[in-house]
Image (tube, rainbow, N blue to C red; front, side, top):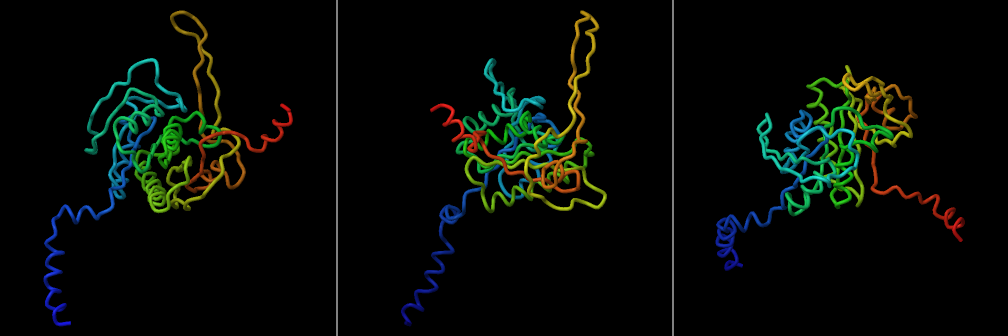
Length: 283
């Protein structure tokens, strides 16, 4: 026993004097987060969420160079994608690509961030992406593309009526979602659609896990005018957020009642309920 006692100080010294590299090798790899959006790399929402997410990992910003709202899951194929490296007003480095949100995520994961990031966060978008509106959202399209490439993803949007300072509040709520995704993970082919109302007078009521409402998240119409030069008829898209009643427990109901809506979404739209019915049709 006395021999072991004599060796104990030597063993402790060996551990303490081990090369720094060996000690670092035992540390888990950093949690890597790809941040993107559809409002453009210079939009205030992306700077707010990227800065907050630094609290749980290493953040990399790769986003469309210009506004790509409403592009859904469209891709850039008819022209080359140009890269611009820049620094945002808050000092974070970023990359802008002349591409749709889905193509931006594709290029970022396949060509810029290797190995794959651990999480994709798209947003914070200005304007809700609720109900059927999620299908045309570039913000959601970016998150869906991340999930299609095997990376857990979050799409995040703030009410159009939100004040500039509400982006900071929204980033805090999205950070709470991202922290839980880091802790618990998401199943394959799954992403989350998060919608944050403007900060209510009494503060947010909390998170609500919701279903996707079976209707548009707002009212869409087209204003008909005449082109001043040619006189040809033209149509301008007019979208008014809100004003759509929806069932309790849906994403629309949640934000209208002061909750942060978190809707689980899956890649793929095949209808399992129709499978046997269609098989009967084609016997």
